Structures are given as C-alpha cells and as structure tokens.
Length: 409
Image (tube, rainbow, N blue to C red; front, top):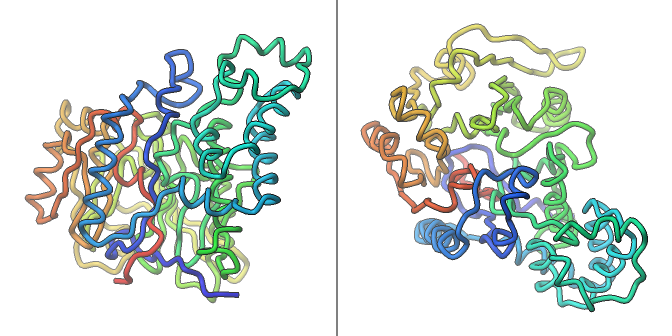
C-alpha cells in the first residue's frame, strides 16, 4: 500500500495541487423549468463562464499550483472495460430514470463511447432527442409516460463546484453524501477516481465519511483551521448527525486533529454552506458575513474517555477562535464592512468565499469590490477573477476548487 498522495492540514498553507472542473455543455442544458430542481437561480452563459474559469485556473498555475481537472481524472480512471461498465451501471442506477428501456438504451450508448466522450455526455446530460437511434431496447409503459421529460438523463450543472462532493482532510477524504439527489451522483466521480485512478489507487487514503451514509455532509461546510482544529457547518446542506459521524472517525490517537468546531448557521439559500459566510485568509484573519454573527452557535467536539464530548461555546467568535487556535488576536473581516446594503449584495455573490493560495494571499471575485478593498486594507493580497457568469451558480473561488495538497504551516 502506497503512502497517501493527499495532504491538507490547513485552509491557508501554500496550495500545491487542486482539482477543478471546467464548465461544459451541462450549463447549456439548464432551462428555466429545470433551475429549481438543479439548484440554480439563473443560467450562466457558457462561453463567458469558460473564459472566467480559465482565468481562475491561470491565476493558480501562474502561482505554481498544479491544476487537475475532474473530467480528465475520471476518464483516466475508467479505461478498463469492466470498471467502465460498473461505473455506467452505478451512474444509471442513481439517475432517477423510471423506464428500463431508456436506461438500457443509455447504457448501450455510453458503452459505445471512449471514456472521455462518455464522461462528457454523462456530465452534460442526454436530451431525449439525442438518444433516438442510439439503442433498440423496447420502451416500457414507464418510458412512455416519462416521454414529456426532455432529458433521458439530467445534466449535472453543479459540477464546477468541486468543493462539495468530497473534501481532502489530512491525508484522507470525506466522500460525501449530498443533501439533494441532483448532486449525489457527482460523488460517484470521486469514488471511482480514488479507487481506480493510477495516482490514487492502492494508496493508504482513509475515508472519514462515505457516500452511503444516511445523513448529508457537503465539502463547503468543511474547513481546516489548523492541524489540530476543524470547523464543520451545520447548515442547509449538512446534518448535525453527519458532524458526529465524521468526528468519531477523525478524532483518534494517530491523527493530529483534536477538536471539531460545529458551527450552527442559519438554514437559508444565501448561507447554504459555512464557506459562503466564513473563510480563513491568514493565520489570524477570517472573512465573515455579519448576518451570521448574532444567530451563530458554536459547539466544541473532542474525544473523551467515554466517547465524544460536546460542549456549547458561549464566548464571542473572536474569543473562540483565539482559544482553540492558540492566537493572541483574531481579526474578523466583515463582508463589505457590514454595510446594510453592500454586505447582503456582495454576500449573494460570495464576497466571503475566498480561496487561499498561501497565508495572506487569496483568490476572490472581482465584483465584490467593497470586501476586496477591505481585505487589501488588512494586508491580504487579492487576486481578482472575472465572475459575471460563474457567480450565477451561487458559489465563489473556494466553492470551485478542491485542494489536494497544501504545504504545512
């Protein structure tokens, strides 16, 4: 068994390797009628979204970061015919397709393609009109009753938010169970990458959470504040029970992590994950959306002699962070300075969602100029990226990236 190629023990250690997904045709398969089911509020313009995403990737590569793409890794993981068949069968079994004829025709179509083309079709979704002539399996009554659905299999437009389906923590991962059926298929890509890709297979990669769990956990709620302290959001997308399951597995003697801070945040769309309202930008500096400070509850979870010990922390957030991280002082940089108009506007476009590429150096959306100016005033180096289209998916630079390797602090 080889050593794990993963290593992330902080939010801010110099970023060495990261996973992205360049938006594809799945974005053009969004329609107004599908937006609610597929968790979008608007439809990005794909050509411009790709230009913006390429600018994001260039910021990272210019800083020496290895950029890996989800679509390439999964294609490389399923070159073996038997693995490819298993992947297709599992994908279709979770796609919510009511008719057997449609499923069988999709299976034949997918298996006729080379791995990379097949992955592109799986991600983009298959329009019912595109499946005509791709298989000769008879259609059942269920198939015919579903014929009003324009898609034989739905697109996966949330894939460019690579933060959520799994999260690198220490030398392992949480392979997540997503809140919605729409997004849970996304975790299959990570499952097959870590099991079969040459870079990861036969490696000692612990799984702190698995996609077969009954409760939800999403990567946007998982933050690594230090090699000893983790923060997990209890949010619109992550259940309290999942936090306990995760804590039970990672708080053990042979791991550096000693404390999990559970952040109970308001369950609303604008605050869907912890990282939409709170991120770490330097050793003692954090962005925060001021609206969560009042209702925020924080619980400390540690390993005791008889199991997990859970204690509500009643101090201010600054005091909690100082005590748990061993800091003399903490600076909370409020989104747009807490202005009652600018803060909610910039929060809607992920003003608090930063990706640290080194201590005190972050990638941000250019549109959040008030928050960006504040970050700069506090000495944070900001790399701004265009975001008119990517932001329509309600996620920022942290949401669109999954670090695989960071330097230790």
